[in-house]
Length: 172
Image 1 (tube, rainbow, N blue to C red):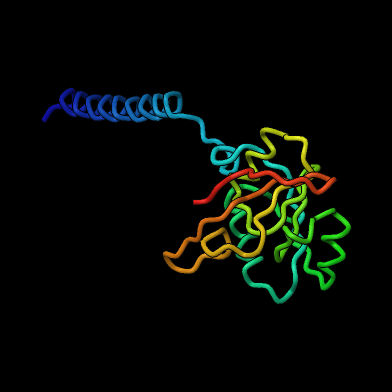
Image 2 (cartoon, rainbow, N blue to C red; image 1 turned 135 degrees about the vertical axis):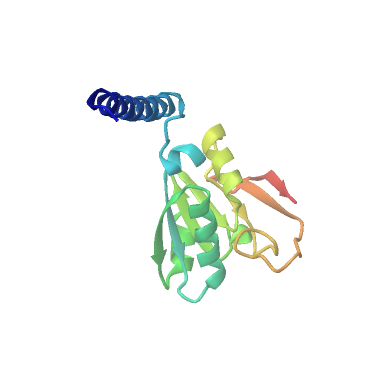
């Protein structure tokens, strides 16, 4: 093999590597400019939601499950464990007939009991002139009160400062 043939083979090898390298760069650039931009995980799943302040008894496990439900829905939750739940309910105007095991505050609203996150989101979206909403008692199948496949029908009600109530949502 002559010196010129060796030179041509080396030159072809370099050109092949250069073409392959350029193709790799072109594909990488094409992918970078055509791929959708990654969104922040919480923003892509949930719009920005306000912080939820939850007051609950230290002995109530279902309240912890409801807190997990609200976090999964995108709420930032401040979890306040307290022994004075009756005083909290009185302080925030929860009618006795609507009382449940935990009380939460979000924006200017009171959320009493196992209210689904979708109802809280609707409340924040519609901004009705009410003090809050409640899932009275502890309805089986509501968030935090899951018991297998059993889901009892229950009504989430709105309530005013004056104590007036109205149906807000029916489940299931």
